[in-house]
Image (tube, rainbow, N blue to C red; front, side, top):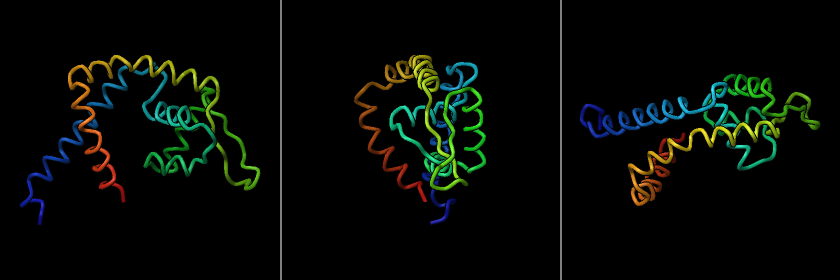
Amino acid sequence: MTVTNNPLAIMLFSEIATVDQAARARLKASLPNDMELSHFSVLNHFSHLGGEKTPAQLARIFHVTKGAMTNTISRLSASGYVHVRPDWDDARRKLISISPAGQAARNTAVHAIEPVFIDVMKKLGPEKAKAMLPILRELRMALLP
C-alpha cells in the first residue's frame, strides 16, 4: 500500500512528530539553564542503571551518531557531571560514568521538570497513561531497525 492510499499512516507519524516536538519543548523550557535535554537523558540513564558505558554504547542506546554523543559527553564532562576514563583493556576506548555532581544535577533537573509531569498526568489521568504505555512500547519496537 502506498502512502497516498494510507492517510492513516501519515496522520499517525504526524501526531508522533508533533507529540515529540511538544514534549521536548516543554521539558527543555523547564530544565535548568545550563542543561540540554540530551544531557538530562544521559544523566538520567546513568542515574537508573549506574555502571560505565562507552560513547558508542551510549550512541546506540540514544539512537544518535557517535559524534553527537561525543559532543554531549564533552559538555557533561566540562560541567563535571560525568567521569571519562580510559578503558584499561582497550586504550582506544573511553568509559563514561556519572559523577556525584552529575547525580545532583539530574536530581535538580527532575525537580525542575516535575511540574510538566504533574500537569500532563492531571490532564490525561492515570488510567489513560497506563493504557497508552503498552501501545507506545509496541510502537517504539516497530520503529526500531
